Image 1 (tube, helix red, strand yellow):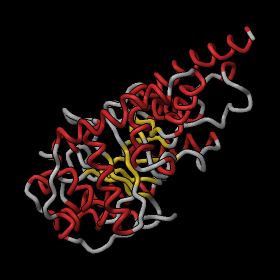
Image 2 (cartoon, helix red, strand yellow):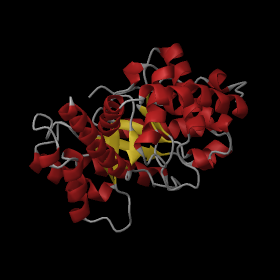
Image 3 (cartoon, one colour):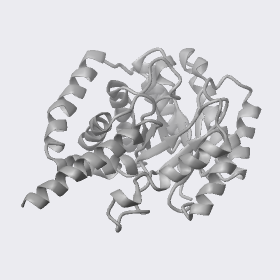
Length: 319
């Protein structure tokens, strides 16, 4: 497995960072408002974006009442999101989500189900670890969670940073912790670092935490746990994108982005995908570099898919 490797912490990158929130919001509006209509003006275009969103989704269940049974259902839905009688036979079984995301204790259930379905090579197993969602646990126990999840079959680890380190500008400590987690993953799992942006205090902190996470070896930076009061928003996404662009300029390394929490509809997803396309480029719109962390997005994907295919079929019949 090809993974990012840490580089030395460069404190100069963290100096003199300034984020003008109003300017960020205006940029988001310019990047998305007109282009969303342009890119989804016809049923064919919207269907394209709908299926693209599906292919970029980490289908997630992170509830206290998760059981083997509902993880089994989650995996089946990830592998076969549409009814066989309602989808082109050439596509059935080939359209699926990028991953399923579960707690470490449920990884074995996900692995068992995806193996039974013959989808282990197609759908990644992501585990939230390291004291999710707070990150406020001893480092040794957080590292043990990573090891446990990988032993049970996880191929991606979504770690969560200790936000107190961010709020107190303890960047070296944050860097060392993420490096330790990178080493715990080794080359067996990709490392996706959750910043918990709603609890980072400022956009400047979000930018700096993004840079530290990437220097420490993260393969992805992720907005949120989905448990904060504020989760994935387009402005904070743009700040993280600017960090990814700067890191790429400095190192030549492409790091992924994962918005999580609050992306519930295809319309929400299209806004994110358009922003990615207009900033990082089309090459980032693939599962290796962009994901949605979502539990409800697939509901709207399914609804839009059936509606749009019916429209297109009726149009073709009329012709």
